[in-house]
Structure formats: structure tokens, C-alpha cells
Image (tube, rainbow, N blue to C red; front, side, top):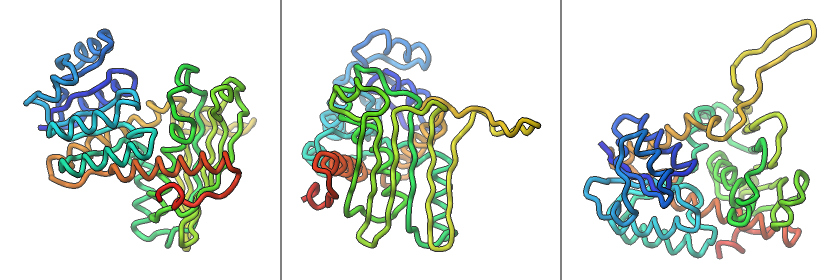
Length: 333
């Protein structure tokens, strides 16, 4: 039995608490959150204790922590809990600063800590099946990857000043999936960005509509398109083209049916929220983390995966600012 504590009882903390409760071999022992009502809600639903972060770090009955606190706290908490001998699952990103991420990962290594970064899309059943098809050689050598990710609506305005911008906040998921599907590290990044859906987003120095082209040393390419607005629902698609064919994962609808009448074909709407679309993925990633700990296996996605996704985001930011192709060597040194 892996005994968990959740740090942060907000929206994503609630998701992970539910995932822990749904996974065999996992138990939610404690929650920490400065907002008493939020912590109390998890205590009421799951019967866990409310403790401070320092109390959890010192607790003998906690094996692993799930970090769902604001991004600015992630690196410090990873270091604290690795030093306390706790396994760590941390929501992306580790930090918004690449140098700080490197420092944090050194502490993980020095303490022989276990760190898994929360790139939940790797655990989506459809995306995972697509990767399995690639591994099985069904489409031959991967040549091109196309990722479409569009949110139904932007987050609240209060979120933008601390989000790190669309590339670090939203596209970072697609950067991770692109690396995963390509099977090679990216060598160059070219990005374009605009404010098309809401001028207030531009007032924060951010964008709401972006396209990115990634290219590896061997010439493989990935194209990513993101938008903060999709009037038709949560648009999540991926296609991988290979030497022998192509594989794709389509959107998820509220029901997997199609109705045909004299007026044409109709399908139910798309799911309209990331926590609904990826509910199964959140449970699967916690189950994978539990398996990692009980079987003594390496955790994936790793801290390095988190660092590389952030580095790609940094390259995209630089590409937009300087209107040019950016080599990853400029970012990574």
C-alpha cells in the first residue's frame, strides 16, 4: 500500500485525490492547503487528515506526495520531500525558470529521490494506444507528428500573470507528447503567435493562438497548433505519419454515436473540460506511479522530460520574440 499526501486541495488537487482513491494499492492519508475549506472538503470526502506541509514531510505514515500547489512552489517542495525521503509526483511544470529546474533535478539526483512529472496525456488510453502502435512497427519509422490542442475557453484573467505564458502553460503538454511520439530530441524550434480571441490576453504580454514546428536532427518534424478558444468543445487530436502508414487519435465526444437522417449526419458534442476529457488519464498516471513505487521501477515521465518540455517552451518564446528558427543548443547550452 502506497500512502499519499496531496499538497494543494484546489481543482487539480481534487482530481488527484479522486485518482488516488480509485487506484488499488493507494491510500490518501493527508492533505495540506492554506485554504481551510478546500482541505476540509477532501477530508470529508476521503477521510484523510489535514496537516501542514512540514508535518507531512516529517510523517512516518506518508510514502509519497502529490504536488498540486502553485508553480512557484514546485521546485522547493520537490527538494524538501526528496530530502525527507518521500517519493514525489509533481504537476507540470517543475518551475518556469530552466536554471531553477536544473538545480532542483540535481537535488533529486543527490538524494536518490523518485520524481514523476504530471504529463497526464501520456496516460490517455488513445494516446497510449497510438504510441503502442508505433512501438509495434505498424506505421514504420515515424516521420511527422501533427498535434491539435484547443481549449473551449481561456482561463480566468487572474491566471495569466502567473501562468508563464501559453507556451509554458498550455503548449508544454504538446511539447512532451511530441518528444514522446517522435522518439528523438528536437534540434530546432520555429513558432508563431498571435492574439486573436481576446485582446485582454495580449495586455498580459501573452498569446492565445500559436503554431510551432519542431525538427529533429534526422529531419523528423512535429507541428503543434494551439488556441485558447474552440467554440465547439475541447479539441484534442493527434496524427503520426510513418514510412508505412499513419495512426491517429481523434476527439472524444460525450457519446460515441453518430445519427444519420435525411438532413445529414450528427454526432454528440465534444467533451468540454480537460478534467473530463482526461479523467481516465489522471487515474492511470497515479496507478503508474504506484506501480513504480511498489515494483521498484524508474518513474516516467521523468524530471528530465519536464526540463526538456520547458526548454522547448523557452525556445518557442525566443522564436516568437526574434522571428526566427531557434536551435535547442541556444537554450540548453
